[in-house]
Length: 77
Image (cartoon, rainbow, N blue to C red; front, top):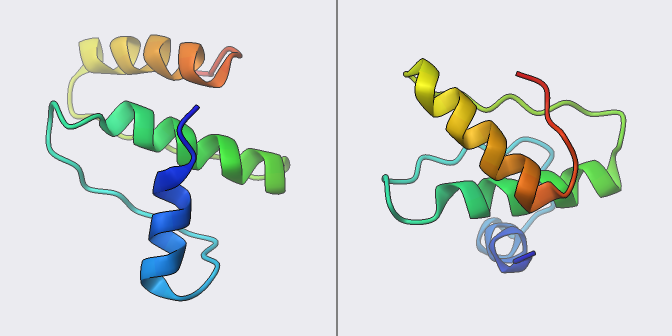
């Protein structure tokens, strides 16, 4: 799992953040970045929830499968 995006975001902002919104272009690894941020957040605060939005139903299922493989556990859809 890549953890660098979380540290980069926190370093760039100069603070530890509790809410992160990422807007990343298609094909630039957004699922890997989002899964990394999600994993770090859930380790630090397991009671928290994550919402991942997409504008197409088929992308929901595709991203859920990729998220599950990156996180190593199932995700709800």
